[in-house]
Length: 383
Image (cartoon, rainbow, N blue to C red):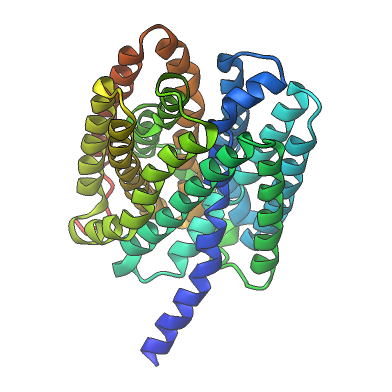
């Protein structure tokens, strides 16, 4: 009976894992097609960096409250509306006649995703045994990484043909996942009337947010720079640059369950310290990379450690505010994706003047993240 119950719970988790793919897919699809978007909309690389910002800024902003709203209004209803909106926004991007419409579609995508990721994660935690939390978070992170694989792959292939097809693909996938999610009941918060945002407003939660922000803007967010190196320095095509980015996300996907088991063994706090250290080291190595082989090897390490970081802080966020699990997760994720939005705006102009300075700057933010992990005091293991 116990084995059957565990099997059922695993089956219940599969749609949540699949749903977790769409945020990274939509977020990263733009990266290898920046030169083509630059040409279509007759603009600059720095301006197209706002294509990432238009997605991640509203995503980060609404994440501050989306988890709490979802807990009060109902996870299932909010997730279903969000997936429908995400599919519609992708159509807007695909059909955009100018840069304004394209940015509007990206903004709509980011807003919809703010109501997808934290509520899916909160439901996953509620469907998981406490002693297996790290493994479930690792598996979820692996599917997020797969979404990160599909993004550059579809974006790179489309860049060599017509970049608009990438957004059509996003819309179709979102519609399919919406149908799958309509067929299952997402776990709802037990005490809906007691859900409040007040439990998120404290120094320890802020420390978790700082960790998420600095790692995403820094060592875990160098993927956009890697893509520019691949296209403009190494001279790769859009699809080849996409394959370079895929090498890192594939490594992250493969190692996600391994990171999860490590977290279950040593706790998410210690695991987070290890993850940030390794990620900062990989960003630092990029200073000396000048060949295609070196770029692939270094980004495989960088992608793997970025996945390790995501698994660690998502595990910490999942246990930080048990009375408002979705709100706690969304609060920390808002800082993660605020970092993802800020990073390209900071480092692309720096990279234009000095590539080495950009990579050194990314790595240095890891020091702040290490302090923040310790300051939060949260862990998945009993003290």
